[in-house]
View (tube, rainbow, N blue to C red):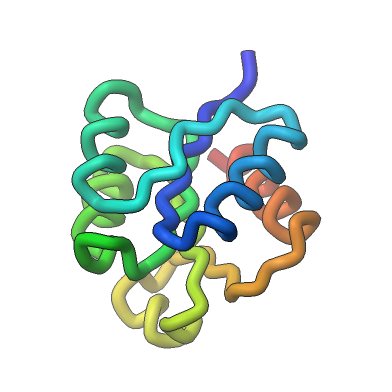
Length: 118
């Protein structure tokens, strides 16, 4: 059984590319979710093995959602083009952050590394 990866990204071209990359690597994808409420509903239905979160979604920033995921031991990859790695690590010191644009191999290598460590 493959791991389920939740993807929250509001830029649809980026979202579909990211979902395709994750699926081609053999993972199940939950999403893409354009907003926090949609991602939270999906999380409440089934806890993912890992979440890839853009920071700015249609209905706000994902920091509160990320705290909820972290409290439930869901590993998080922040995927951002608007916040620096330092800004994210100020709020989440143990965060894994990949800046946009991120090569697909770097994303999948990071997903695999994080799932192996979980």
